[in-house]
Image (tube, rainbow, N blue to C red; front, side, top):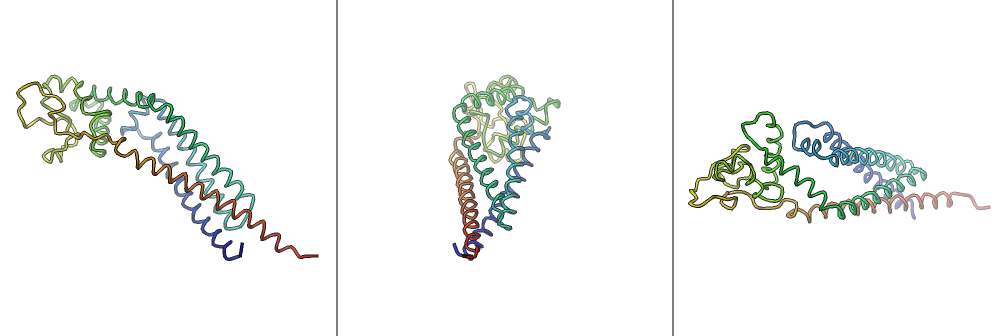
Length: 258
């Protein structure tokens, strides 16, 4: 490889690792936020499910490793240090293997994970009471989730039919954060009242609420992002091993012939 191509590879790998350093900082910060947060919906999941806390520790570990990996890659690329590039390649390969293993675990235990999260949300919906100030922060957090993701419940709006307050009101009210009506645009929490009079018993089908499943609707995007990350990691592995190999070749060309 010519010296020009070697320099291009070196600086491209440097920029690549700089992005990894920033990505690691973001992942680390997100993991710390989950552990430190006490007021949002994440805290509900964290207190109800040990899996969320475990996941947060994993994020902290992955973020720290990614930052270290980015630092080693930058240093190794700029100074052309083969041992650092080799260590960077090894770290990147370990992360890729870990991601594949985590993906397989999630795939084979997805029903169990879905069931656990579903039970947590169903309990929160069943206990939802706008007047109850004790759990107001948690309820506001769930309202925020529904409003931002334009969803209603975990599996659908029918889960809200188990709420005692709505049962007492004969289902003539619905959660405002689920509403897709323009008149409820400013209402982010609590219950809104049906404008249309229902002759028979009202159900969730009569509510003007969102019907979409955010996870199903965005599953393609999530899978695309995961695939993109894996491709970028593979690219980093190829660049690092290529640079490492050609630094070695350049060293040999500099040895004077006898």
